[in-house]
Amino acid sequence: MRRRGIFITLDGMDGSGKSTQARLLGEFLRARGYRVVTTREPGGTPLGEAIRRVLLGRRAPRASALAELALMYAARAQHIEEVVRPALERGQAVVSDRYHDASMAYQGYGRGLGAATVRAFDRIVCRDWQPDLTLILDLEPEESLRRVRGRKQRRSRFEAAGLPFLKRVRAGYRAIARREPERVILVRAGRSVAEVQRDIRAHVERFLHNGRRRRAPRRRQPVPSATVTLPMGAF
Ligand code: TMP
Image 1 (cartoon, rainbow, N blue to C red):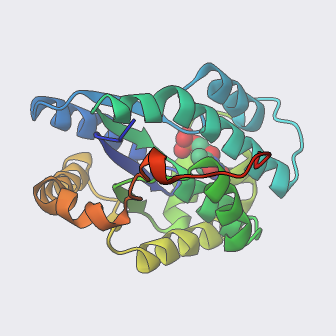
Image 2 (image 1 turned 180 degrees about the vertical axis):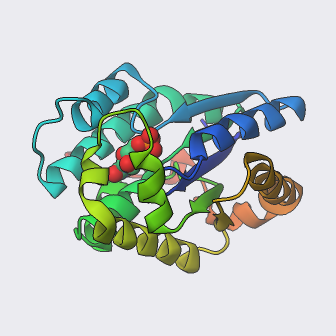
């Protein structure tokens, strides 16, 4: 079935207030008459939440960078299948608190796996399910660390990786924004919730106005089934 909905992702540094902003953006879109699904990664499905507990829970086992990336993409595959794709096909608006840019920033840049490795997973798992608009909440790594250390939760594996890691993550997010200015907008975090939300809404308003026109060329055209001839045994 053809995709009809809109797909917006929020991403960025730990402690940037992204989850609050995602919730407020969902409310904004609902008030504008959209049927909205707000979701998150890793998570959003029973399998995704289980993977989240494995990776980010209290007794998180050791995992290599590649295992970490593969688990994030396993959660994402399920998330697309169970949540993102059905909602977009129903014509709903999906607002996801993190998506594949987090894998690029944290595993590709932060862990040093490199962009090509992350893109290889992306090609297999995300395929056409690419966000229409992504807002990256940008925050100084020092401030990010200070904020997550102030939380009551136990330290996460990423916080434990320290400042140099978070600096690479931030460089990753900024590189993504430079590479894909059509899709990705950097929003300065570290301000009040209301100020950040005002900026986000302005960007989303602009996207809703002219986004559909801009998006069109990025979509793959469906191939009429009559023209597809596959040799026997192609699969
Ligand atoms: P959060 O959703 O509460 O921000 O926490 C998720 C953590 O997982 C955060 O530190 C970023 C990290 N993460 C990755 O490293 N790679 C990913 O692909 C995703 C979705 C999250």
